[in-house]
Amino acid sequence: MKLVILGPPGSGKGTVAGRLAKDFHLKHLSVGHLLREESRKKTKTAEEIRKFINKGDLVPNHISIDLVKKHVKRNKDYILDGFPRALEQAESIADLGIDLVLYLNLPEKDVLERLSKRRTDPLTGKTYHLKFLPPPKEIVKRLIKRKDDTPKAIKERLRVFNKETRPVLKYFKKRGMLKKINGTQTPDKVYHAVKTVVEEL
Ligand code: G5P
Ligand code: MG
Figure (cartoon, rainbow, N blue to C red):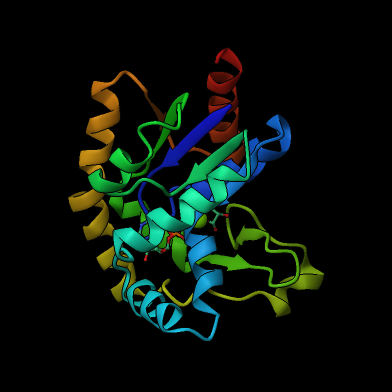
């Protein structure tokens, strides 16, 4: 099974993809996560990636496309989280045989609350929300915020989503591959809705 999950910043892509990966034995390929890992290396490309991510802009297509190509080759069943986000990226994976594109819909007014209260555990990589998905008390002190979760970068990420990624949603809708999910509910309810769709598949 080959899935794609898209949605605005903070819509729950990573949260849903993590659970799907576990339940359906898929490799979770979060392109944001892979790029953040690349950006920690001591190379010129890493420096370039950091610059784009911290501003909230898309990393140049040739970098994300090459990275995705490398990872999809190594896996048969996967969920691509946050890719493709631009039409050129969508065209680059036209021959992969994607089964379904999940679109988590979340209104802009909810995005800031989702991201300003998001915390990540650097030890396990798990993501929490101080209100919607509270972390266990004993680990609260070690949790960190993402560098691009500043109001300025969030605004830019939203702008980029509307300009670059909405046309990708249209592209998949036209091909009958898009399934829209209401992302405003509790994490369990959203996951239940997604799981039902994937089970039907
Ligand atoms: P990322 O890392 O892909 P974004 O902005 O697309 O970044 P982000 O921030 O990772 O998306 P998400 O994964 O959609 O958000 O959401 P999440 O982390 O699971 O959940 C957000 C919060 O809400 C958490 O606190 C969570 O606990 C809570 N939550 C989750 N689900 C629910 C729910 O159902 N209900 C409720 N109530 N709460 C919930 O990309 C980062 C950067 O990398 C580069 C770009 O620079 C990008 O800005 N990049 C690319 N560049 C070029 N091309 C690509 N394809 C690129 N992909 C990434
Ligand atoms: Mg994510």
